[in-house]
Length: 110
Image 1 (cartoon, rainbow, N blue to C red):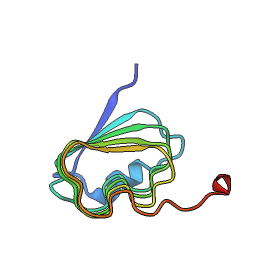
Image 2: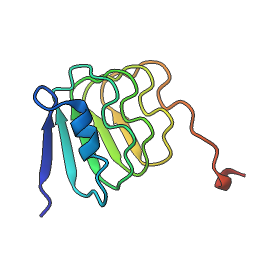
Image 3: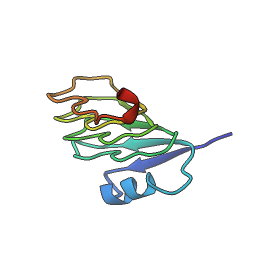
Image 4: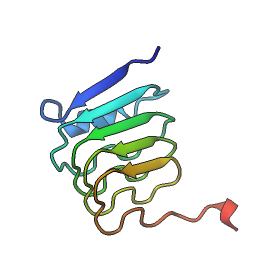
């Protein structure tokens, strides 16, 4: 049985959280609590994992996603899911402008 790893942004710096989410061979499920409008939450994900952000995020949350399933249980600022290659991002609240902007062209698109 997989356990859920929790990060509390009221106690742990964002850089430490994002570094943990970039670990080689990452597996499991993750919850990020108390984002309080923090920018760049759960960016650059490149693993087949589930991430839930419990609250509102600022700019560019879940940007550059590859393979992860990211749920933001709150509102998201400008550029949420920007430059996403694959995976999913679901904002349960409101998303600001430029949501999902700029998906780069791939060879498969030709």
